[in-house]
Picture: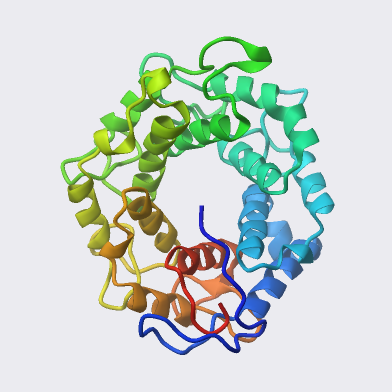
Length: 342
C-alpha cells in the first residue's frame, strides 16, 4: 500500500524539496478539507449525483485522508456506519454502491477495504462468511473468471482482482466460510483466466484478446501478486516473478509517461492523474518503480491541484473530484514525495 505522507507543513509550508522537483507545494490542508466537506454535505448535488458509486467514493476519500494524516476529520464510527448501511445481508451477503442498490464486487471490495483500514473488527467478523460466500458464488467455473454481480453476468479482470483481494483481506483465500477446508474459489482457474488476458506486449486486457490498458495491468498484476503472496506455494500458487515477463511489461508501463510528465493508460492517449496509481503500483509490485521520471510526474500531479478549494483533477485546470484526488495523493505517496506540504 502507499506510505503515509509525513507532515512537513500543515498548509504547504516547510520541508525541503527532494530530487530536484518543483518547489510548488502539495496543498495538504486544502485537499483534506475538500474531501471531508464532500463526505459531510450529504445534501450537495455532487454527493447525491455520485450515489451509483458512493461506497467506492468513501474508500477513495477516507484513504486519501489517511495518506494526508487527516483521518480524524471524518469520525471512524460514522464512516463504518455509512459502509454497513450498504450491506445487503439478507439478499446475498454483498455490498452495494449505496443503500437500496444491488450488490456488486466493486463495492464489496471497497467496503472490505474501508472496514479493514478503520480496524472495524466486529463488523468484519460479521460480514466475513457472508461476503466470502457472495464472492465465491460469482466465479464462473468453466474458466475461473468472476462476474461483477449476479444480474449482468459481465466478466472482467477487474472482478478477478476484486474477488481475490476481498478474500485475502478477509483471511478466507485459503479456507472457506465456517472454517471449511480448502479455498472457497478455484485459485488455479482464477489465475488461468487472468493469464489468458495477457497480450504480446506483456500487458493485460479486460478479457482474452482485449487491448492492453494500464488499469487492467494493475488489476491483473495485483491479482497474481495476491495469489503468490496470500495463497503461495502451500496452495500451489507461484510468486509474481514466475508469472510475468517483468521487463517487457515494465517497458510498456514506463512508456506511458508523456512529454508533459503525466502517465496515460494506452498509447496515443492523454495523460491523466488516475494512471499515476495504476502504472506506479504495477511497477512497484515488480520492483521497477524507478523506471519512470519521478520529478516530472510529481510536477504534473502538483499542477493538477486546486490550491484554493482543494482537490486534484485529471489534468491541469480541469474540475477536481474525489477519484482523482485519491489517485493523485496515492501517486505522490508512492513516489516518496518530500517537498513542500509533504
